[in-house]
Length: 270
Ligand SMILES: [Zn+2]
Ligand SMILES: [Zn+2]
Image (cartoon, rainbow, N blue to C red; front, top):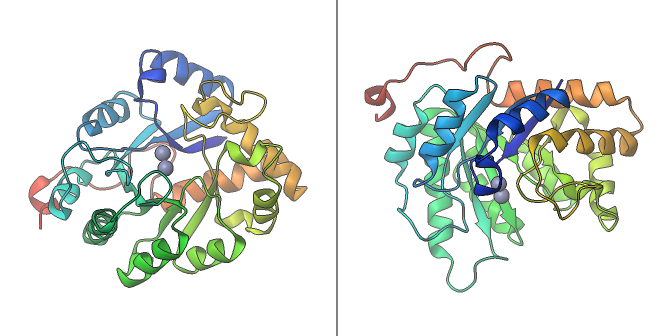
């Protein structure tokens, strides 16, 4: 059993072939996936996928690199997160690589997501790029450790991973771990304990070797588990078992049943 903890299969590269995507997941032993929201405008697509496929979950959030659409309020996020197929808030965080100038709006939006996550007691999916220090500072000051979550597509140093783990975050590794030039990140993965590790594709981007440059998809998460097995010199089955168990633990879902809680917008809006 393998789980892809972060994918965007609602994006145009994959959305036209969802049955194929899900078939190939099954063929590769990838039993579950989390389809991650990047905007309020596209959240309905994400939710529709999670409603159609019982083994695919949804999150709700607005990506730090998205600025075309509606700005989320904590109330709105909590309301949308009340749907039983929604297991997390995000992706959210800071991206000082993609965005420049006065990024106060990005930090405010990040705080809003953390506040929403605390209100609805759901874990956070964190995106951070060239902004590790501010990301950790905001997680700390907003009390994110109360809900924890995932540092997705992790490319930071071991000390950053350790500080995130101390705030109840898991560290998720993507296809970047399979790239020849990612030696530093491989060393970090060697030191993050399996019991705090997740794996993800971030598809349709970042296809792992040997598919680098092609359209990525959840089935390829197997390559990342294989790479971790090589780096840590442990059995593949051990990596698969641990990362899957971690997924079900952090997102509070059981493999055969929908997540706990029922859809009640009234309760969610409190
Ligand atoms: Zn991201
Ligand atoms: Zn993503």
